[in-house]
Image (cartoon, rainbow, N blue to C red; front, side):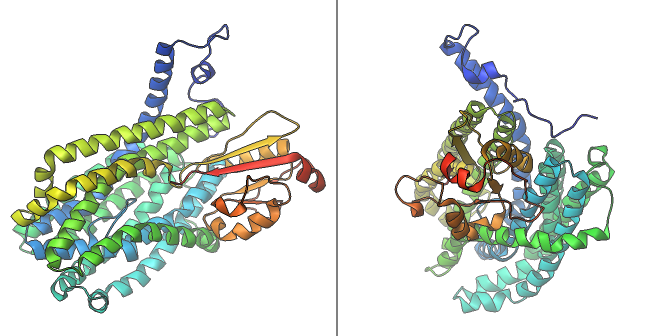
Length: 524
């Protein structure tokens, strides 16, 4: 069977990337257009499944909120404050701040553990790490659920409207079962993505969305449950998504090497998982809270039912547009890592350029659609004439935010470039943080450039002082060490086996004289 990790040749041929013809002359403009189209095709092929998967999963709770919102402004505000949006997006709800964003961050450990395991051909370990991630999710679900039962007094303490707080607390209690399903679901999604198995995810996210629409309608309107029918529908749909995708992983031949069954060995890797998942969850929550605070501030304004609903609609609109560029960011990571594995630097740079341009075009398309049809869009959330009138002047500010966020969503924290130059070679190597061949790439760098170790753990931002101490002797910065934000650790052979890539080459005193490392962190 072919080795799935042996992708040392780029997706696009060298002549497509370099832009030179056989005779060494520059290609004509029409050939360069074809090159752009080929790169665009390669990215869209991978990005589309990720875009639809994220969008469909995101819309599961969103459609439930839409059903609740048509019961009245109080219900919309309560559902908004409780749980208007989550799953890999910028969100603004209490459930996101204390639950769903945390679960998403916990699953981020699998990007490192499963990604490195797949690249190192330790296929069995992917299943072990998946189980340890689910164990961690189960424990934190229990802790968060206890906290959620005290939602109403917490909202009262921070000054939220009593009526909205009561509705939000009721909504969030019925969504506790969905929190556990979400934790398991996010882990399985990362498990599949690290193996580049993304097309089936579209089906296993679209079907639960369709089912959720039917369940929400029945529970809210026909069964007479009203407001509480919406969170119940969300929980049921999330469990359907988890069970169906989990069954697929267990039964499909695609995972016969990476899933070998349940094992008690997974408990041994819980601590390793926590060392990565907890810092990852903290970073994800901080990013989400920057948006969620808007809803809580809106609840402190006069007429909180209207202001909270307006802010909720704005943030959810931007979150949906973010789903498009979020899928592109996953495609960019895959395309860049493929070219880097082939030591094709120009191909990696071209992939990044195409991704940025495409994300801008997609964001602009969303903006135009919003400017033309904002009245109809608001109608999906509320029938209130007041909300429709108040939303109109916010459209232009929202359009500007969407345009900028479409680019930021691709670049922020997604792509790290590492350019290494030495006096002994003219070769340059770029490494993508999301590469499935991190250990292999680090090994190759060690053979070429000496005692250099790259470690992409989520907690490495806390180790900046170590980076500074280790690298200060041989890294040449322009003016000031402190102006460069770094989230990567450089050191000698001193890390645990899970992240260690044995490096050989120059001795320590030679390294300080011969190696120059320039690191660029793209985060706008």
